[in-house]
Image 1 (tube, rainbow, N blue to C red):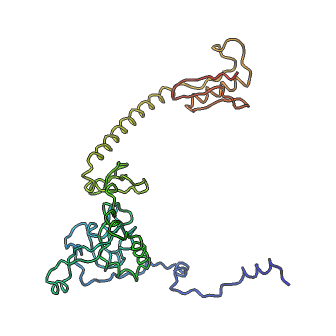
Image 2: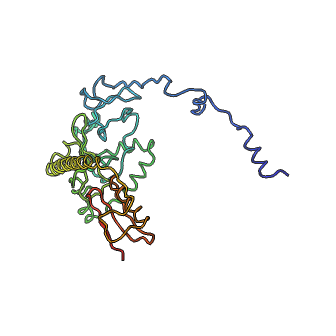
Image 3: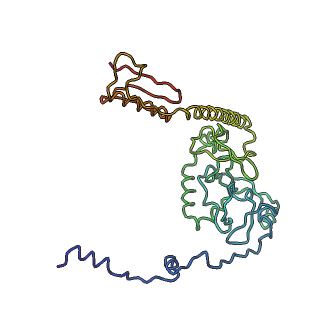
Length: 330
């Protein structure tokens, strides 16, 4: 009867019982093939507008889908794209945008423009349809949008989790007239700027990292200057603090440079015997060694604390303040 070690060795030496298919990704890597090297043909859309946005029909600053011939403005997408724009992007026809839903906030019947077929029947181009108020991933409550229910129904097959998200929202919806009166889908303070934390310059305009009233810091988002133009007081406060910070940083840098240049000329001089400024006796060798250690640390602008074997602090050195403080330990 073979031992366990022998059986494991035989199992590890045996070859795999499956054969690699040439279409498999791993086999492509083994034989030096790459998917990127293959010729990729874009899907030709018959209704694609050449050099124009497929939503508004205007040109300029268009995002080109990498899998089809659609082109869009970042602002015309749902949700709209913000800087930095992706290098590889696929349009809503190729990738469903409802996959980026963070949560559903509300649902109601809202007016919308009807299709030509429906308009001929109703005699008007405006009809009321059921829509969901959606908060998108990576965007603040300022950019919540209403999405018609038919868009959800079309996406159920492609996004099974979306149906679960809608069902959970329906279970949490308030029931009764009194509850509906108190229900607010978006609290007003969630769209009010509490403070601005940082700033960055985009190709088109400035963007600010915003902390919102009533929300935690993990829900801070980058917002363009035009989106928060009504909060000029917070923008001015941020700019004033930034100018003060730059001024203090420059002053501190100048002081540090002057202090460094002044102390560079001072070289460490070791005491071979007890110094004259310590009257009343001679230092022991270990005390002299500790004193030299403090002087050397001070010359290197290093903060140190010297203590004895019991942990009692004997001396502290703070080179930035150019002082040496002594502590009596009894």
